[in-house]
Image (tube, rainbow, N blue to C red; front, top):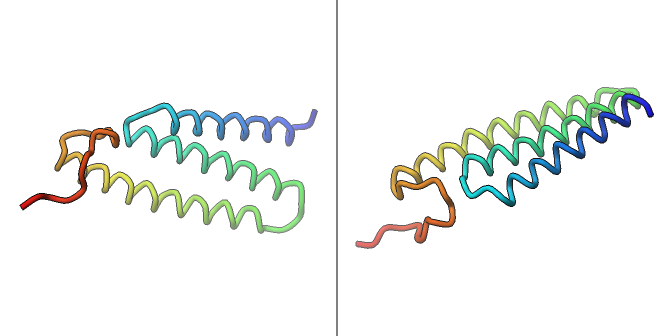
Length: 102
């Protein structure tokens, strides 16, 4: 078993942990953290694939995924904070309506 195989198993484990967090946690912040964990597992796979082959394609794609993850986290946290200000909860199931009644 090589180091690349171990990294693939680690990536699969991280992805499964992130998926478990997304499916089981009810807090919106925890769901965002699970999504970030899944993106990091995908990045680990990209870097390992890049190590096996020559070129910078995997590293550039991983850099792009990190950039998208940062933007997703910033927008997601802004939305969660705005919803929390209005509904006083961070649990998505307790938000019953998305617009105000006049």
